[in-house]
Length: 212
Image 1 (tube, helix red, strand yellow):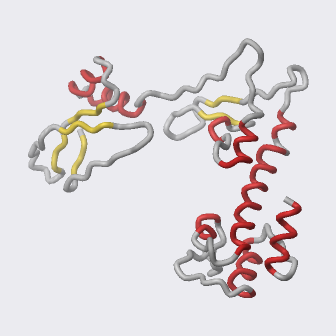
Image 2: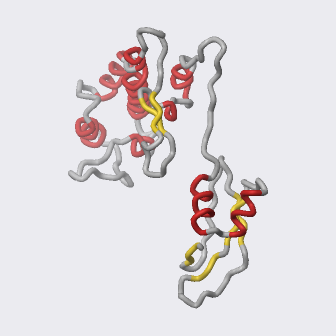
Image 3: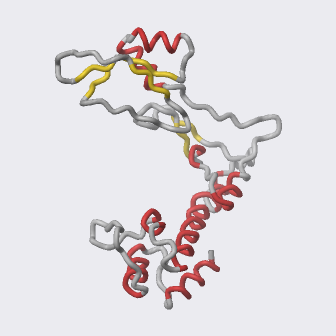
């Protein structure tokens, strides 16, 4: 981090608060005269220096890559490197996350201190953080998720025979239902089967439909 701070200062030609979006914006678009075309602005009218916007500037100046790496390291440092040791239980000398059954609007389970659903997996630094999570001897990590919870609730509430039939038969890869136009005429469209993949979401578009 200290090395990156020196590099960024050298690229900028002067010292500034790297953690200040406004000062970063002044350096990039004021002093270095980088193009801000196509970049979003903050509510105060300042050109945004959020990560998605900085990525659009890659290749314009070496300071951009340095800033992106700096932010990644600072996030890992404050969120994990500095925070995790404070969460160690003095009795077990291990970290015990807290699970919440009613912590989200959708009813899905969440966790905190630390959030186990947000452990980094990308980049070399993120992988190093992930390697710190090791189960105790004789234990393993269990990764679990609800299986189409919202659709199961919908099937129960609507008592849709087709949906219930698919769930009973264990055909969880498909969702079948009847789709009607929302024009009040009740014209029934042909039955559609939509495959819902964990790794890829697909959306079917129909003229102003409502789903029953």
